[in-house]
Image (cartoon, rainbow, N blue to C red; front, side, top):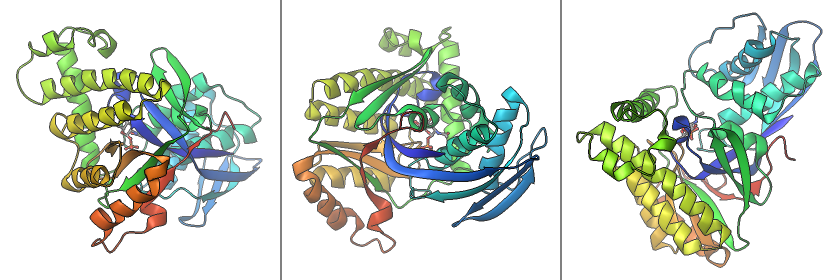
Length: 361
Ligand code: NG1
């Protein structure tokens, strides 16, 4: 069983408000090879992270924060919450997806391990069922994220971006025009998921929820058409900023889908830049390195760029024409990475080729 990493093209910090996002899976993945066990023992070996073993008891509790065993436990716990504890597996895990590179390697591990545990027990599960358990499952690790990463890892289609809607759950594949190229470039600043960045993330989510409640609305989907007038009723501050980011980003996702469908790379690029500005100025989840990276991409001939993922460090996603890709890559190396010693091309500057999800190989 395997699951790919992903890059989110646009629709940032809105999946947890039930709004549609546009990620695409990558051709890089976490792979889990396994033998079913006849008892509740779960054994997993990873070439990079070592061996872990635990009994699939109920309920499972987390081990030390930051330990990769928590993702294995999260998978088991997510399954147990719906179907009860099952028999374990003896698994070996490999990955060509760099960790801590903003490509959602942790969600890919969670998805792949969940699918392996289910397969070992002769169970299939639908997209719907997996989406009922996986986003909540990841909260076991201490994060309170949305469902974008799991959806992208499950139902992406090669050559396409996926418009993921959450209410109701749906996925629509949008072919990426032939001469568009996406690059994922690391800011070389890492946002520790289990640390302060996660608290900041949760704060953004809470501010958005509070803004909505103050306006007497139940769903962000109901706020989009009335957003400017509604925002005027909110006092200046993080709640209003969060509301403005969320509603404007949702509209940018719609516009981006239409730009992709009509092969308008310039318009898509402008939407990426507008998204970055909103994440930087309203939600305040960017950082100097990410801002500089976006600028360096534009100076190098990109059509657009923005931070991708939760922010506070991590990566930018960059759009350019295929004929300009080599020049943009060179430009980024000269303008951004030249004096940064830890730069490693294979890990930090990646051609994001749209790949398939685990359920759509
Ligand atoms: P990252 O930090 O890139 O994995 C997180 C959330 C997403 C989404 C983005 C912001 C998890 C597992 N992922 O992504 O659901 O909310 O932030 O758009 O928490």
